[in-house]
Length: 139
Image 1 (cartoon, one colour):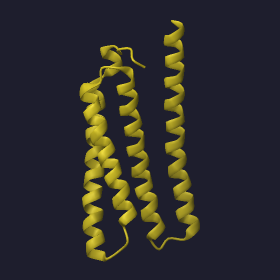
Image 2 (cartoon, rainbow, N blue to C red; image 1 turned 135 degrees about the horizontal axis):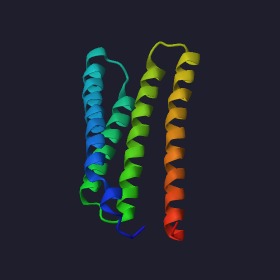
Image 3 (cartoon, rainbow, N blue to C red; image 1 turned 60 degrees about the horizontal axis):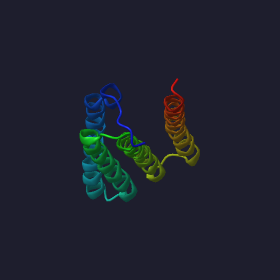
């Protein structure tokens, strides 16, 4: 994890543009839910919490993309991005739980959302594992 990835592997600009778009989404959602919570007197505190965590994780990942020079920096930035995207999903689930939907409907949507995130997360980890094993063996 202490080796220096090539410039192609680092791909800072591509990662930054992706992070900025999602951080903007988290920030906008956070402000909208905070205003909505105050206006409608609903209990959106969990949504606010998850959106704040999401925004802060995206902001931290963006900072790590700026000065990543070791492989573990890239891994940490990726972990922060995954935590941020999971927090976005959790904010949606928390909104579903307080809205007047049927419990079955909210549960099905929650399972679908978490499944999509989980499959994507598993695939990323698997690809990274294969990449690092091949790098270690020199393939």
